[in-house]
Amino acid sequence: MTDPYKSPEPTLGSYLAVLRRRKWWVIAITVLGLVASLGYSLTEPKAYSASAQLLVQAETEVTTAGSPQPITSTDVLTELQLVTTAPVKAAVTRQLGSAPNVSAAEVGQTNVISVTATAASPARAALIANAYATAFITYQRSVTISNLAAAETQLSRQIASTAAQAKSLQSNPAAAAQVSALLGTESALKEQLAQLQVNGAVATDAVQLVTPATAPSAPSSPKPARDAILGLVLGLLLGIGLAFVVAHLDDTVYLKDEVERLTPGSRVLGLVPMVDTWKNKGQAFVITATKPNSVAGEAYRSLRTSLQFATLDGLARVILVTSASEGEGKSATVANLGVVLATAGERVAIISCDLRRPRLAQFFGLDEQVGLTTVLLGRCTLEEALRPVPGINGLTILATGERPSDPTGVLGSYQLAGVLGQLRKTFDLVLVDSPPLLPVTDAVILAQAVDSTLLVVASGKTRGRDLRRATETLSLVHATTIGVVLNEVTKATGYGYGYGKRYGYGEYAPTGAAANGDGKYASTGAAANGDGAQPIGAAPVLPRHRRTTQPRTGEA
Image 1: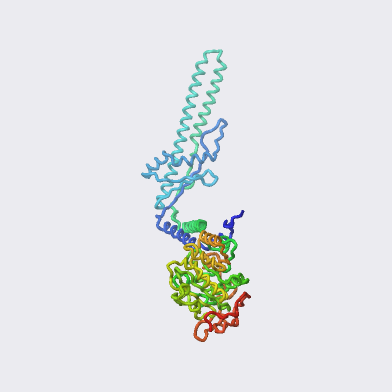
Image 2: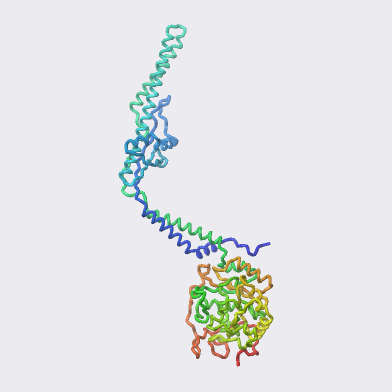
């Protein structure tokens, strides 16, 4: 059985979305790597490098055939190790007073060895490299001379021994053949000795200095340009790697696909972009009333259309709007959705059932003194508690009222069910604002009293595990979820949400929207004309089961 919560296989698009969301991380770490490398490069003392090149030649030894031994790659590697041996360093110490470290390397696939020294001054670097080169040549020469001397001594001893044996056998006629062989051996040894002496006289050094080190004109380190490029590349790679690690560990919901995966059976009805004013969570702001032609206003109208299609059967008249956790925009969704529905000709009531932290009325500059709890306590009638929203024709609000000591008990009472029943008969659509699902049980109780639930998810804020728990909580009480609203969408969260760039109109100039007679704002395409008729240019209202014969509460 396939797990509906299992994450899909990553794609190129998902990788790019991660980098887009974490771009400031990547940029910051890249810049940090660049600054760190430049800072290190500019503060590091200058160092100069000089190199002397040595040529490795054939040894002076000869074979029995008289031909010199060829140089192999093993011979060159052996010479590389001998450059920094103790005898060479001792000779350099006698010359310079110390033996600084040097490096020796083979030049390509040749018999040339490069001895490189690094020092604080150009002249010092060249002096050290040449000192090692000459000390190594002297050392190799002394070794060669010692080998030749040892070979001559050995041959001289063999010649003397052979001559003595031949002399001792000359008086014995029976050993004439043996004497003749010894004399032949003596003659051959004398020829080898003579050849060895000739080779020693004309032999060249096994290692020769072909290119002495000269003082460099520019420092070998630091190299700011090179270090800057390396720091930039390393910082970029580290930033990208860190972005993917954080994204792997991050459980936050960003994308529409993630929401639909975590809410099986539900659809995302709308994507609402982030509004700058929403960054101040303490300020209530109705974008659809103050800036109806903005991108966010168009998004709410798109949500309105999706919601109207989802409720065509007329069965979902009372809709609970809630979220998994606090601060995800459920109250703002109720306020703005109520405005766009009312301006499209719907009779809409919005109810503040968040008895713990009510703020729905604040969006319209109203107080919460008289409202739902006032009606439930019998201190006023429902008609008296309902208040029309100023400037928005067709929108009525039922505030919270006094805060009760037991909100859960109030929301579970039969009286609340009666209030919802009366509102269902009076209005085309009732939107209920509630506390979040996970911290308290208020929303769970309300979900059983309403027709359907609209879940609000804040992109870049809602945790995946919280959204999953919220969905499971609604499922346990058999609540019907009409859909999900993905709120606070930004380009950084994976959507290039901008009608202006995509369709060629951004915050277009209103046509037909004007201030009404009392100076209050009338929304685009739905001026507050007072007669309840749909004005010219308003969005078409989809057919639904509406009560058109019963007068609106509070109307004369």
